[in-house]
Each structure stands twice: as structure tokens, then as C-alpha cells.
Length: 470
Image 1 (cartoon, rainbow, N blue to C red):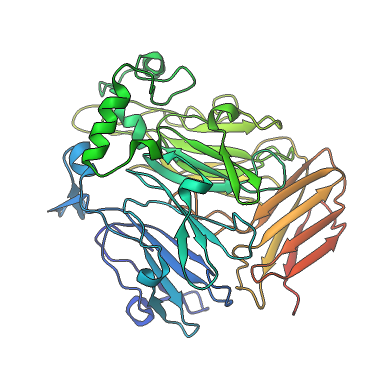
Image 2: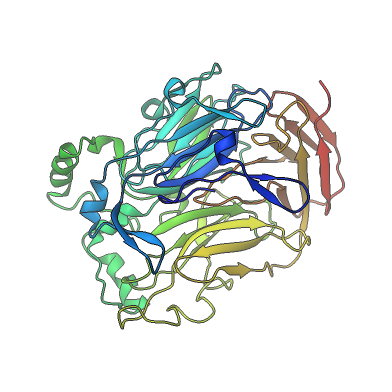
């Protein structure tokens, strides 16, 4: 697990219900402002390597003994100019130890990294890495296949969000290719919205003020003088304005290692987003998106977003209609802070079929508050699930890609490591089948390249599949 200045910790599962701290023994000791740890096999040797994202020195040296934490910087400006910290890539030596190969790999990054998305964007058999930035441009690193990575962001993605938090890979338009969704929270902090705990209706009205774009709740770059002002400010920080987007980004995979940005067209621009949890919640055959949202105290309440897939490459927000909003217990926490209401807000979320009924449930992690557990109450529809175990590939099958054919419909899922922001959803691949009563075939591309075909697997069941010996 990672921490802020508390030291990261690796616990070894002894297999008897107990764990052992093996951080020092394994060679992964680090104290900093760490965020997402992700295990994936970057060199296809069958062992899971470890990548840790780090942000910046955004805390002071003042320690709050009551809360057990270091205090943060006093203002957003002070926080943004904090000295950056860099990512770490540990190579798994195959004997319970790791070697820091950050310098030779090219994955040091640019600082302010909170999340990571792992996927083979160019289908060359090696897992690539996308790292969003909380303050600055994101980075897509192509895996060169010999232990090194190259930043190919400009020629592959183009502009990336300036204030990104979460990133998630999924097929939003059902074309059988994995797309990349990135949510941008920090750009929304430019809006000048008040801290006076206005009602939600008042807050929503603020979306129409002149700082926001007519196309959605994002920065309005047509505001007179806006671009010139921001270009100058970014130049002073060593950033290039022309590399940046302000708001969420949805990168549609065109195949052949090419992408186009389609967030506004898809209807996925949202306000104050943090984490992403994807899944086919209504089992109609199209993956939906749950976005944790809000700032909490001292800001007003902002709702989580449940973006339901319309099946045509667009989404519609349905949180209130489907029981996500408002939260049980109200929009404010039970106790005030400084004598004022403390608005609830969510930070991250995971998805799994917790009760084994073929429907995906959602659990959120909330800021200074209890979690939410949303049980799926959609009408039951056909589905099929797969749990993979690697043999020559890594045992968890991280990076495996499953494509399913039902009639003329193709669906794709990747066995993901951590992703979406401080979250690890189930490794079970879930497919909603909608009106399909059978599956024609499933093709699994295992991490080390083996292709396996499964003909006509029974539906409404969980299938455990082991990688064949090569």
C-alpha cells in the first residue's frame, strides 16, 4: 500500500490468513507522496513488476498529532508549485525481490501523477502505460519491448487534460477496441465558484456563468483574454498551453495506434470528477461509467455521476433516477467543520459482482466519511463472466484481453490492474449480453501472446479458465 510520507508497505500473504511486512526485504522502501501502485508484467517474463506513481511535496513539515498527518499547503497556488516527485518502476527479479529500474526504463515521468492506465494501445504484445497529471500534461509511454519506454503522447493522443486525476481503459462504443477515458478535476478549480455552501440548485446555475464553455461544464477558452493569460502563466511554470485540454478527455481508439478525442461528442464532460469505475451495470451489452465527484468542505455538495451508455457512442447522466443520488443521510456529513456544514464527496470507486447474481455492484471511498455500497437493482439480463489464471503468463493474467462474439456483436474486456484512481476493481471479466441468448465464441489473448479460443461458453455463469501450456 502507498501513503503520504508514511512510507509505502508491501505485505506478503503467508497463505494462512496472516501477512508479513516484506517492504525492506523486497527492496521497495520509499517515503514520499505516493498514490497508485500497480502490478503489471512490462517485460513479459511471467512475473508482475511494480509501478508506483508519485505526486509532489504538497505537505508542510507541520505534523498534526491529533489527526496523525502532515498539514497540506495553504492555497492552491502554493500546492501547484510544490517540488515534484517522480514515479518508480521496480523490476520483479522472480525471487521475492525487486530492482529499481526507473532511470533506465524512461518511466520517471513529470511529477504529479495520481493514477495509471495499463493497456497495449498498439497491439504489439507489450503493455503500455498512460500516466495522467494533476497539474500538467499526461504521458502515454510506448513499451519498446526491451525494458524501455518512449513518450509518444503528442503523436498518439495529442492534447491531454491539465488537471487529471483518474484514467480508465474500456470500449465505450462497442467496436472491439479499448479506448481511454481521463477525468480532469483540477481545471474545474479555476471556475471561481464560491465556497459559501450554496444549495445544489444554485451550484448548478453556476455552470452557466461566463467562465464555462457552452458545450459543457469545462473551461471556456473563448472568454476574451483567457488564452493569452493562461499561456503566459503556464510559460512561467515551464508548461506549454498548446499541449493541454481543460476538462475530461475520451480517446477513441481508431486502431493502428491512432486515437481521436471525443469527450464532448460522447457526453462525458462532467464537473469536479475524481475516480472512474466502468462496467455494464444494466447488462445491455454496453459499458457504463460511474464517476466519483465533488470537493467536500469548504465547498458545496456536488453529486456523483452515473453515465449510462446509450449504445451509440454517447452517454446520459442517470445518477438521481437510478438511486445513486442523493446520498443516504443527506448531502452533508453529520458533523460540521468550523461550525459550517461539511459537504459529502466521493474520491474513488470499484466494481464487482459482489453477490454473484451476474449484476455489477459499486463501492465508493469517500472523503472523511463512510463508504457507499450500491447494490445493483437493475432487472436481470443475460451475462457471462470469466476468471483467468495464467501459467506461463503472470498468474493473475494482468493484461489479458478477452473478445467475445455474439452474432454480429463484438465486446472486449481487459484484465486490469489498479486503475480509475486509487482503486482496484474485480479481475473477473464481466459481459452483459443484452438480448443475446448465447455466445458464439470467445478469444483470449494471454499476456505472453498465446491465443485461446473458447467455443459457445454457457451463459449466465462464471467460467474459470487456465492458460494452456505452450
